[in-house]
Structure formats: structure tokens, C-alpha cells
Length: 138
Image 1: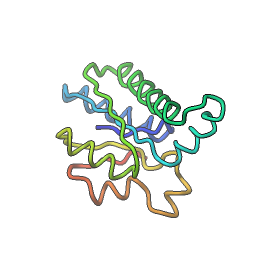
Image 2: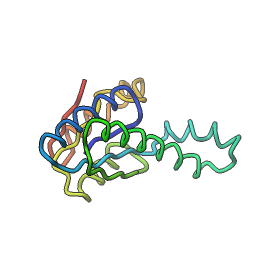
Image 3: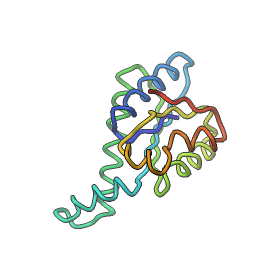
């Protein structure tokens, strides 16, 4: 499984996860989480579009579709997409546990760089709490 938020760190993680999936002839699960930072971004669009739920869903879908296109370009053919919500680390753990994931790949820093410094990063939490191996891509 690779976690993405659309950041440059997430794109590097997709590259690593795609390489692993291709080399091992495995499936790739791509996951994103609609967290508070994405919700703030969605609220700005919702002022124009009207419904924050629809905007949040569209932003998450775009993040996943972009990640899927990148992984397909790198040669992965079997891809599944998942969206979670709420606490990013816990949501990713839940997705991994519910899909028999053997490894989570993610970037060291995503969109919430400052929040990660203040509250602890998602990658740190996953390394400590995930029920499977975690690969953190610099």
C-alpha cells in the first residue's frame, strides 16, 4: 500500500511502491485520507461550489487518480484505490488492516510539514503503530 496526499514526497513514495509492486508482480493499493488540512482547502472551493462534502470527495478522487496514473505509467497494472477520513495515521492503519496489506510506503513529509513538526509526523506514527512493515521514503 502507498499513502498519498499529492505532495512531492508522496510522489516519490508512489515511485518506490510501484517499483516494488512491479518487481514482485503484486497488487498496489493506493490510499489517501481526507484530513483537516484537505478540509480547509475544500472549504475555500466550497464557497464557490457550494457543498464541502462534494469538494472534499473530488479533491481526494483527484489525488488518487493522479497517483494511479503515475503508478500505471511505471508499469503497475493491478491497482486499487481507497479513501479514508479523520486522523491520517489511524485511517491508514485501518485501511491497511482491512485489506491485508503487507507493507505501507509513504513519504517522510507531506503537505502538513509544519503540523508534523509540532504534532509528530504521520510517518513517525505509522512506524510505531502499523500492523505491517513501513517504508518511509525521503
